[in-house]
Length: 394
Image (cartoon, rainbow, N blue to C red; front, side, top):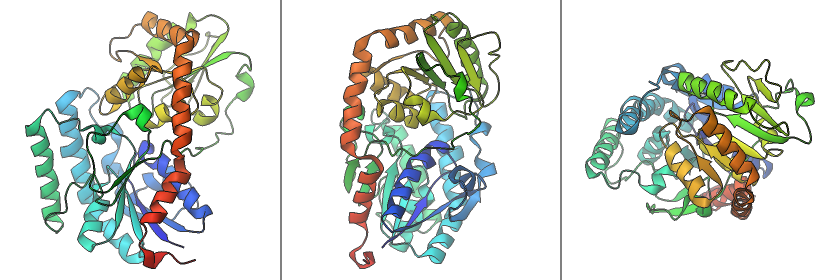
């Protein structure tokens, strides 16, 4: 039996894949606790989880991020105003969690740099959970000044928290990096971490069941299109959804569209083939879907392709353009300009993806790669082998 401490930021897309891994480890008799900003991390995990508080999530609500940021401005905000301040805010709580829980291994999300800081300072083994493959593609390789700037920010973080010199890049454990994708989708990694790099696919974990979802309104024989733009895209996401509604009103009657509309911006009344609800049972709907329309969030892309469902992707920022291009390069979907797509563009893309067999064929090939990767079970296997031998108690 081993004791794992999962260190996570207050972000749905980073907590979700690790929930599946945690459940798998517990099923094998191991113990799992979490460290992350409160109250958001406990809310994302649900009841019954042991969560050590590490920072105040109210200071790091993604809704506070300016919606218009793109390119280097978005990257600058991410590092200077989010990742580094988040690490500073979490470090004390993560250190206290380590003292109280005495884990055998820390599993550190790539954006929860405090976990790497504390582990390196204490000389504890830690594994990286790369919830998105973007860092493995070395997105700033052609911009040496930007890369040096990121290195400088990390060095300042290490200096403030007493991390030993020579620790290396906090985004990559020197022992084990788990990438929650497949090489067939992401391509061969440009960055080769010092430790093992393991592609484990999608660690699927059913989210809240949303028992009040109106399943009786989902037509069994319809070609189902699921539309989700996450919970953190604010006004820009609302504009896209209202444009998309006009597109879906013109779809042939054999189609039905289910829209995740957490902010209640879609006036779907009078559009008989559209069902818009605040929250959706995403995995359950994807299993029945003909296509998924999304912004390129990593979990949604991988959940869709792990079920062989092709995509229409309209990326907004961060790693989303990279993921959208991976979908296009794989042949499993189409890409739209988020800020310029018209209702006609959206309608035509959905029809093409649903009616052209090659998209489903390529999505099916990627589904096979996700099946081979092993998901949460494979991730748990790699973590178990990485736990120090002294902790492996039968």
